[in-house]
Image (cartoon, rainbow, N blue to C red; front, side, top):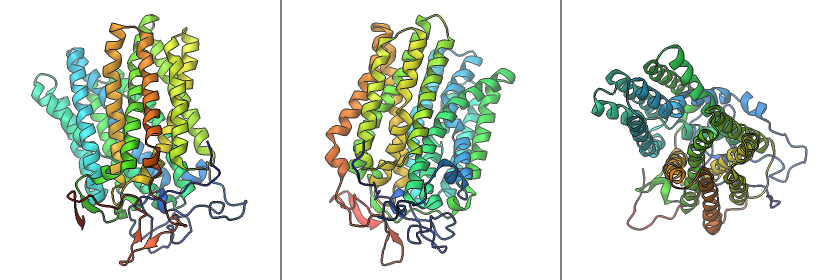
Length: 484
């Protein structure tokens, strides 16, 4: 898994400012009080060992990450702000059923919400890159919450209003996830700390997607499904408020970007990664449906909960281990190895053994999920064109979600036409397809060569910290040649 050379990232830029604590200042970037530019792991200073320094260079742990100014606030605020997104489909289904609607209507509303979210994330991500976080994230969070208020108020008596509510809620779901990853470099400064924060972020997501649905069911049990919609979205707005009122978010500005109609998608490396993670999402989505079928086969609804809990537990363990180590070699090659192990973990699920063994296999299948996501964050950061980092991360969220929806759509008919085992085989096929995409695009992911010191920012004539844009060549006819 290692090549013996320490990785450096190179796309999204550096944090600079009056405090001189970004990559240029070499002090770790914890208290940057100047204008924070579009940053990624690329612009951070590597630690002493990366630069050929002494072996006793400072180690970075999760505690070090969370003790950095604003880090715990930003992580917590983002997770709380994303609760409406994490629980949206479950909340919509429970509300529709409580209102007397059937599963078809519940599924239709949840699907409309998912499609709207997939469309809105990259568009809002681009808006954040162009306008800043405060001017986009908070209004989007409020409008999204109002969409759910419309659904709760209209119920299912008026289907046009119900669908309008979920579409508004999905379309304006704020891209807090991509926004947080754009902020990490300005908050943490050093590249190794940013990469560890990505792993912590992936682990925290597993906790959120486990706790969120549980919180929804508790509110429904003690209050009502309509109240659950309102409470969760009110909490989400508060979370967004915590993030956007923080200093790093308020002062963050994306680097000037070329006015290109494709935006982040003009990066071939990013497209390759998105193609792979569509199939990773497909694998995970198929497991959701296959797990329900397996639970039905064994006559106990609780079995599904055990399988999903085991998968999340495996992801937590894998993510914690991945983030606790210092990795060498390029992240693109490491991601290929991790996705290969992820696919290998999905294949035994098709055996569908007894519940204890199946639970163990579910934990094994989740072991490499969080590491794959964390490593993918680094790859996105390296390949996002200048000034598109939030949009690029939002595309990853969208692609993964669309893949998961495709997985559920494929696995359902497979259960009915074949068997539960074959529906789990869809996950294995998805993992293999994800691996094949990465293997077939290695030259694209490798990208053009970089300078001898890619960790050092290169000032442009205007005094800004320039980004190492690996995708700087504009295609004739598709770009204005101007900065946006």
